[in-house]
Image (cartoon, rainbow, N blue to C red; front, top):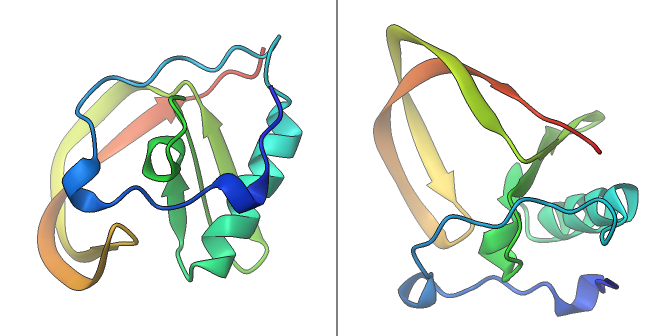
Length: 114
């Protein structure tokens, strides 16, 4: 599967499908290339995180980062969570200019690369 950065456009909020994204098949996707393309688009759009479904890719994958601290997560699974909650402002590239106060539950995830 070849993915071009120029093809990754934000899916409009009113067109977001509600579904569980497909797991990434590392036999079909170059994880390193996808990570670099997603991080580049995220930075170009001024974000700090970007999920594959936000840009029209049916894959369970997201990237996040600020400056040199960058993370890519493939096929995440929540393995534990805390009852501890924090309040924080949250924004989204899908809804530019909107920030809401949310309750954030602390959790751990695992990610597997092939």
